[in-house]
Image (spheres, rainbow, N blue to C red):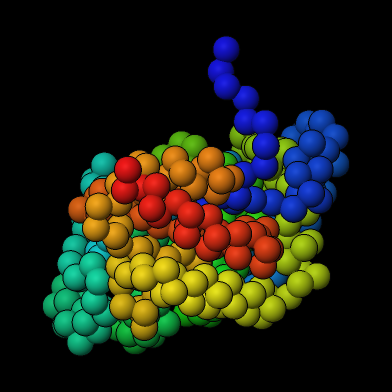
Length: 366
């Protein structure tokens, strides 16, 4: 028999996140058939709330995807370019590389713009790369690179791309709801219910600028399930093309109600305050950030493991105290760890993180 989780844990991973009691109640709401008017009203309302939350109801539409953020990302990548055109991807981490891998599997031509992992994107060099290849139709970039905690200059990149007549695709999975996202300049913006919007994992979305409609209509379907045009056409009519994750949509609807009551600017300020509180504490504990502070976002902090501290031992000590931290990825595996500050966390939760770290770091050396 599997071991049951018998006590509340504070999740410091970049999704899933802790949710409020109201969102938890909503996921256990009434059973709904997705072909009945009750669900159609729910889906239509959730889509409207999502567009309203970001002030884009007049300029954008949205496709809700039953799947993790990667499912919505794949949906957007597959719709990003027409036949014979190229997708340029800014690659400075695990999630930039993920877009390249998605495109490669779909046999979409990709121009990889390699950028150092822990340095600013060289905008002048990127502009030269965009100008050099007339086949480039869309420029793609990760907003918050979760593998390092770097926040890429999406606004500047989007302005540059549009100046050269390119579409813009942004992976905002771990930033939307916590960082300002320049949606007016973005054609395809990917997000997740289960990160900074405080819903559950397994539900994601693509915000689509209405100006994209003519281009999308001329692009081939590259997937049966993850076809953006199919999702948009059906959802705009109030019906999903396939059986969706009904309970997750119920929970997301409740989470969007909470965001509306709080207000997006207040939510963004709350994330900045969280990051500042935790980072002051990390400094007091002598923990070194992986990335320069000026490049960091406000949803996650990547920290170097102190000499002699093993990640597994630190993780286990923190988990015994009720806090779940996250390992480093790729080349940073075993040398750093990550603490995400997403979801329904209180100031008491955050100060508890710092107390638990102070106790757990010495145990990580054993």
